[in-house]
Length: 437
Image (cartoon, rainbow, N blue to C red; front, side):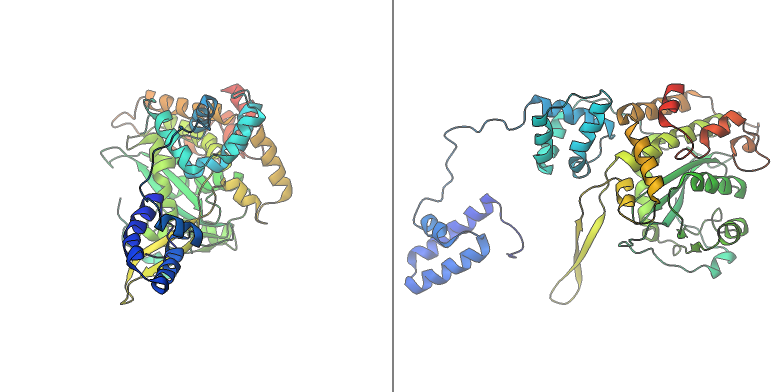
């Protein structure tokens, strides 16, 4: 057994019982060698091993049961935090327990005490896992609502590559499109354009009606109007909605200095960061239902405005820190051992870099502190109900796509709607928006 793998107590006792038979029959010199081997394998002190070898290795039941370390108030606090952060895994939830509890207490969602905060700071991930099983049992589930294509001729001049998994510079974005077409791809329907920054896991999402260059370019402008750090590289797949003259003009002429790369055809892992976020951040809200009207796409984007805050500023995310390739004696790869860092929110990761200006960082931090994440999550799910309460498109009647645009001069969107979506991070106070809702 590898010395890097730590034994649990049952494995250790099983090993020691086998060694005890050899130890009892061995001479002095042989016992010294056996004890040295057992020290390496079990990581126990030599004197402890001698006592175990000369005693009974059967495990005895506790004479007195250990009292509960964490009381009912911990379960109540975990329940509120778990709901507020939308039921993320224990590995992501545990590092954020203290600061999220303090944040929710400031908004009147929780009552905290020094003892409670101390326990939240020392509770382990495994304990949180066990308690979440009970906490989540019986809870009402929230409503949870394609292959690569051949590259076109313009793709020949765009290099194929993968953004390195250990990229540290913010601004390298993977881009993909999620279709909300239901069972049929006929007619116009809504899609979600999602961009994920590899270094910080920052997410940007915009709903678009159709896949024309007009709506895609408008989505880019929406994203750039609120993105608090510059774009360095975009990395889409080979879809024609990304690889076309208009997109190349946008990223090459209008926004100078942005490099463009693309995935290899039929290789989804080349866009793995954005692909793995489709399920929790897009399908988790809309599933595979059809969304196909102007009214629905407007609500989708109001939802994504709120989800922008909820994910980027409140949900801790794990990031891959190290990969170790495990090979057999013939040199063949048999396993990849991955080690992840402690979970942090995308905004916290961004603030650890020099990509965001200090004044933008301070402004966003103040706006974040004004937001109640539990109410924000509820607003998101209320919007989901509103979206699916609206009627779908009428067969044979075209929807006016210009009514969904913001930045295009031909936009038919009302001015009050434009004010709602323009520059949400730097031009709008979240509390005012919550009062309007």
